[in-house]
Length: 79
Image (cartoon, rainbow, N blue to C red; front, top):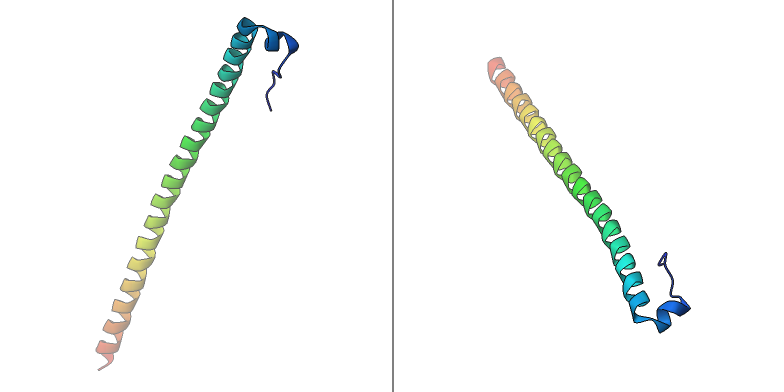
């Protein structure tokens, strides 16, 4: 909802209408700038978490492979 609703003066005066529209557009631009900043922050946080998740997956895979190799070596040593 607009903070500057239509007025009777705006309805009858083109100059007043233009000035109020400029103020409304300035408010919209300020709000969109804030939203854009927040979206950029969210994108960075998502990218950071994705990189962290990749590290966890690689570490878990490495640990699993090392454990399987250790098990195979242990089994072979008993024969």
